Length: 189
Image 1 (cartoon, rainbow, N blue to C red):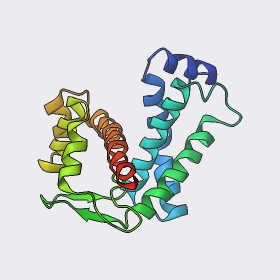
Image 2 (image 1 turned 120 degrees about the vertical axis):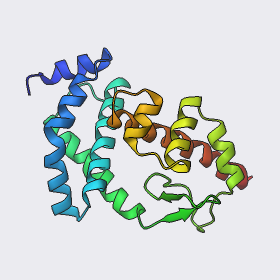
Image 3 (image 1 turned 90 degrees about the vertical axis):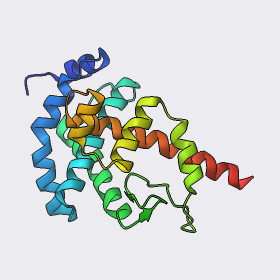
Image 4 (image 1 turned 180 degrees about the vertical axis):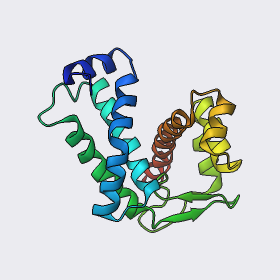
């Protein structure tokens, strides 16, 4: 990779996404092979985990949590990805249907069910979605209710490509989970 480690941090802080794209392309396939072999992940789980690792890497730099590397970038990304893939494998055992019979897999709705396995009501999910920014509402509805794939969402939303749509969906799911968690807190009082 042509970028120096400190330059990667500098470029990301300036809003340049190219170092992230380069890192993704450079290490994704190796991570997929490694995590499938080491943890028994399937290819989709491994790809999702690595994409989340790249997003966390970006967030850690933007928030100032990561200012220098004590290991290589590859080691850092693989460590984050390792935890992500293990969590994905564990959470994929949780599958829930909502009233519209749309299948929502546990890794994206990690807090969809509480410890007693009580699902949120359709009203709570709808209310939480309605509190999200308009673009997030549209991305989630296109994916879960209209069953659009990432390429179709990218075209509909005029995103650069399917990877951009997938990143956006991931961010929106995290926001949705945060909103759903508020219902849990309300129910405790």
